[in-house]
Image (cartoon, rainbow, N blue to C red; front, side, top):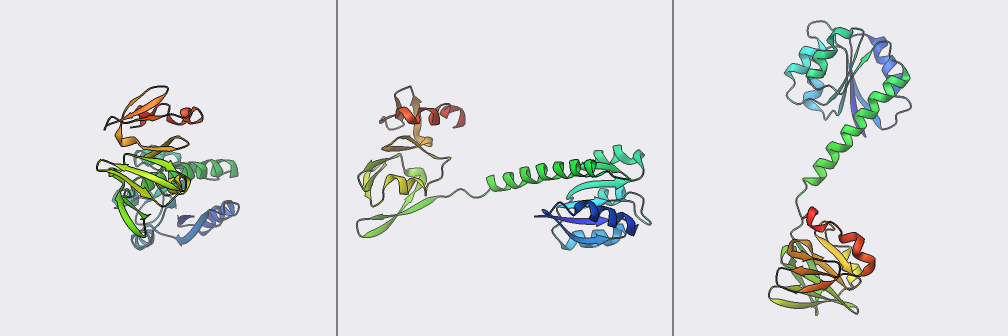
Length: 234
């Protein structure tokens, strides 16, 4: 859900924007302000993703307000004056709509908002802390394995051979179950019986993968497309 704030000194302008938003259920209008000062107070105390902003308002214009904001959300300027467009885009507004606004033009602006919002969400997700370990069942107990220490995994019936520098540990899990709990950007299945840690790969040809410790792992025919370009992604 995208939280939006409408800022315009004219009540009719609010009504027009709300009318356009009726078919956009992913936009949640959390407030309506009739001055820049009122809007700045709302922005300081709430998480606002999108600002519908007028330019000509008493006391402080929309452009002047944007210049002093500490944290600026995405902005769609809605104005009857075209001459402020350049200033708006210099302040990195997402779009500039001229009153009266058509539904088609309004929808185009919202599509830009969504695209930027999704890119920001994806970037935030990519910055999430990387998992450091996994806890697996070994014999009758549990053991914590550092992900960066695992060279590769080998299917062994209803068990998995987990290979590290210090040797092999037999884990009570199928390979399929274990794969589902490993980060897919780090661990790649290259054969029905093998999963490799991409951080340990030093060589690759059409038949096998070579790891830092000198071990070679066969590449299954059906898995070859998955590992094409592996070095470009490392």
